[in-house]
Length: 362
Ligand SMILES: Cc1ncc(COP(=O)(O)O)c(C=O)c1O
Image 1 (cartoon, rainbow, N blue to C red):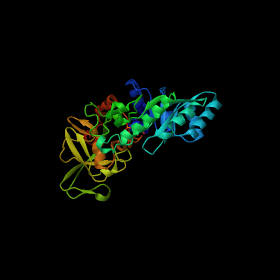
Image 2: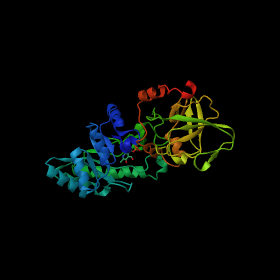
Image 3: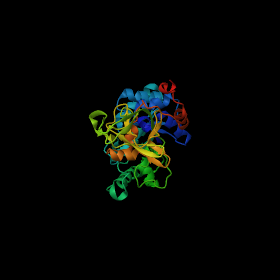
Image 4: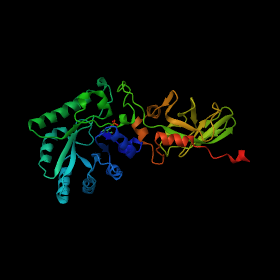
């Protein structure tokens, strides 16, 4: 399963879904009904599982209408689905989630065998899968307090009881990216891969032998250059003051696009083999670079905020370490306002000639 929730981890859900299908994905995981409908409206017909909770009858009715599989955590939702499906005269596929140690969505794992038997007794409901979610698979085995092993034991205990009762749970799945990389024992019938699909490792010790490449580069254009003297305060609150005559470059991207404001004065960008420091508060639509040591930088040049430039690279993990969060949150923070371009579209945009400078033409 390719997990494409949160707009494909900020990459654009439909673009990612199409690429994942080409790459061999069998189905998709989304968090909300709207995310599922977006895939259907784009003509994607593969199975879609809504990983979030849909508790309202109206939401479940839309699931049936758009052929999206809801995740259920108990009999209440199963019976709602049964009623809806009976009314529509067609079966409704769903998946049962069990909580094995995350204390979030899912029925208590001990309830698993009873629930599977009860759901299978419903005429218009098809149990397409049973799954659970790992809470600490990204921690090394010695540091997760045995939680991953415990969650797997609980999942296994449900499965053995289902086998004894000859109940068919459908597709079994447990692993996120970290679980997938941690051990093939956690793979079962399917893995639900999010972060790693986008080219990032969920932890430094996992997947070291994989040649993962980040799918996203974040680039923005220099819109203005200004020469200032020493002692000039920069941006809101003057959180940076020049200590020498400086050349400042204004870049058209800000926190409204997903560049965290907490990174103010801590960010660097790549340009022509150099790292340029960002200075002053990052604002809603712009940020400012100290380009004093980069005389070749011109208006219209494109700088790299995330991704590779020559031998150097800046990753979401570099950002997340600096602002005490995780790469997932950095990626999901990129907003709709940012145009998503394929590599060839981006090259065409970057190579496009600048409008002639009227000052020079005169
Ligand atoms: C239920 C579920 N499965 C799979 C994933 C994918 O996780 P990851 O991005 O760590 O691979 C998520 C993401 O949070 C999730 O909530």
